[in-house]
Length: 393
Length: 167
View 1 (tube, rainbow over the protein chains, first blue to last red):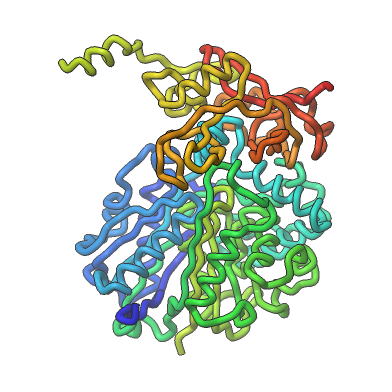
View 2 (tube, rainbow over the protein chains, first blue to last red; view 1 turned 90 degrees about the vertical axis):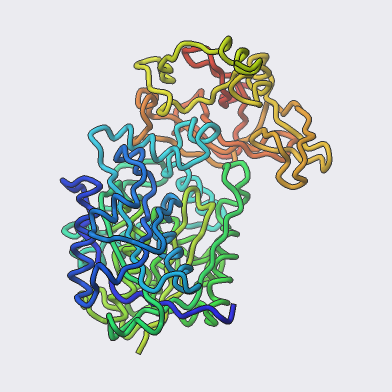
């Protein structure tokens, strides 16, 4: 693997997340507009490859073959590699991972990874059907389960086994919504949530309340990645991809094992840290997949940011906040930004790039960040995908 | 036409929309959660036939003896297709549960609120996910006993669910 080339994210942009009066192709157009504005040195002709993260356009937008559709909307004519990547909630990171592999191998020099998802439909029952198909549809989804009841069971077991409290769950939501207040692209940019307010919101899947759950969101985001020698043509502050890890060990819920010890994340995390040559203590920030409050708590533990069972205390004590051990989800997380499945992983990479460039709102700027981790889980936490970024000087 | 194609043509039935689980409105095939169960549609038809007889079954690998869930046609460990059908226990205990209070898929909105959970089968190393019937979610507790029952949807197909055990 010594022949592998260096790869960097050299720019990116996120469109406004929310319940958007815009179709899938229109969101892709917005992502293209935002990307070319954010990276003035980038010309369409520079881009040899396009990777399109989209989880369920067949269900949400009645559209297949979205890679050339996105290319047309964004004004790109890929001539090396064009493909869609689908990994449910991690579809966006999948696009970046594929672009990374293509550039590292020498097949591509300049690649765009875009994530697009349109989730708010006239019939939300159909949207919920799409979400239930992420599970093993004829065996698990058939019982009516989408993500909330699964992660509710994770929370229930974590509370039973480790004494985690509703107040600690709310601490995750309060922190991430506070950061979202300082992120104009976040779905809940204008909303503030005090902890008492979060604890009074209606139950969605007990013990999880509305404020414990990320939402069905329309959105898009795009990044451009280049080989090491081309990076400085586009930016003075490249975000270098230094490590990666991924693990999948089950799909049907019967084969999940422990709900509270995410073995796949422990393994993928260990590989991500090993390949980057760092330890969890080196991280300045992390974009962790907080599809639900309990997810972020279990992730602290599986990544070794705190001992097993102490994730609730970790967040309640402010150790994942500004001024803590590291800052987790300064973008506002999935809880504060919303979770357009294909766009989320790309928006997280945009956040890392902008944090490294130190150009985000000071209320969420991580002081002088050098190492960042991005994590996505997908489905019932049966796949974990991670990337480690280092700030270029 | 080949012999196989003739056989297939004989078995063809008119295209019809499947009724939803609640029987309210029919849903198109690609919005229908329930698996196709006839022997010309799946190699797991015996699972549904046994369920109709009141038995929950799955496949076990003849080579390594491992119980496989869901039932399948090839052992993922041995990569061998010599599998036997075996009966599973019809009772178990709730390991974890929650309830769907909002956001149900199409065709299931009428069943909200409903309980789902993971159930450890008595005496078998399997923890199955499923709908739990028989009590409101506020009355469900970890460790409670449930039994497996066949649930018939309006078009006659069957699937398994759990029901609070009245023992």
